[in-house]
Length: 177
Picture 1 (cartoon, helix red, strand yellow):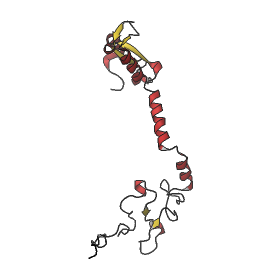
Picture 2: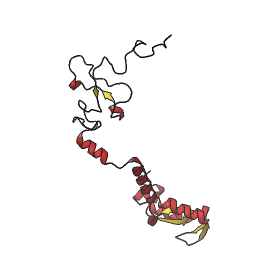
Picture 3: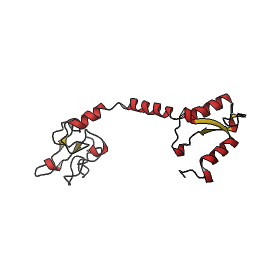
Picture 4: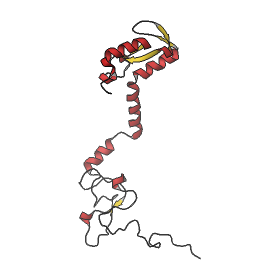
């Protein structure tokens, strides 16, 4: 006995490539979901019946994902394809982001050095304190457009840090809150 037919047509439904609405995209992945190889309908190029399909890998009757020009290169027009192909790959973009982030975390680096050493001296009162008795402070606060770089961080004891914060933000309110 042959196995039962489980296709959508045999179940009474429509196939994934047919729709009563000629402007509807095919179900599943599609150009709106970022799949440049998907098949979709383009009503501007249909004649009569409304079930003509266009294959995006050929690019003959499809519009660019990014604009309204005809797609000639994997779902994109010539200009957008050149821009897309010129982008660095994902691995290099991620590595660049990590390098950029590591450049801008001066407070975290200083905090790590203080914890590693176990003690530090206050830059204001020059007292020597254990690691849990000091705070890493930004000379120019981040809330006042200071940078999180090595040259903008310092170690202060808790008392000096309270005084400096009071000077930076009179009234106890920072501009960001």
